[in-house]
Length: 262
Image (cartoon, rainbow, N blue to C red; front, side, top):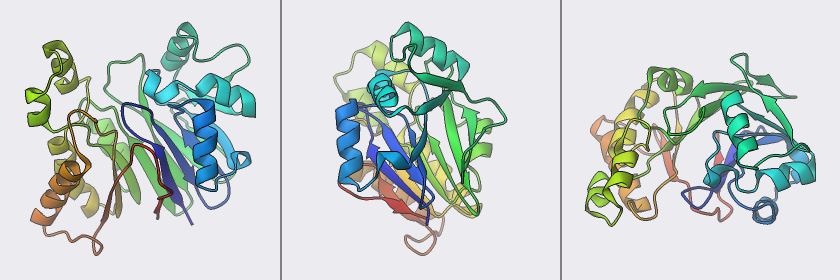
């Protein structure tokens, strides 16, 4: 049984646990080591089951607890070379951290193979991940300025996909953020809107994806019910039915014990 547990999601921190029923991995460590350990305990996940940590990019909401957590539990940490350099400069890792580079050949673990793909975001060298677990596969694609051909190719055919649905464009435009920040979020190196996310989903269903997790929602410029409804409406408009053709979940800011099984 494969599952994804969104431990944290959003601007206050991001982390996902992905498991094939035995061992697992963490993608991002965006809360303190204490909060991460507590979240794992709350979800009945043993730290000893974690084979490795994978990091998407160096922004604090994805790595704030990385150094302490990885060093405390002596976990290998995979990332791009650009992200590694940025993490060293920002002191999110140190000489004790077991930093490793994931290249285009991916990483083989005991029962998983993890591949990387490039994302468009205002960071050093951001990447997303596709986790292959025998007959099942999962992809995490957040912090996307737009859905590139590489992102589309990487996530297509996955059984489950966690994809960014960061903001409602009208809420963002009418909100209190300064103009320069609004422009950054709306740019090709910013974040994916509800509209852009929802339009992408029907094509994935046609290629076999059955489970969706809407991720990295903005607290200020989005609401879970708005993101959920927009994606559901677009899928329904394409004659795709909830529970029959797909399931749709919104990753909570902090998990309440829910997971997506696929």
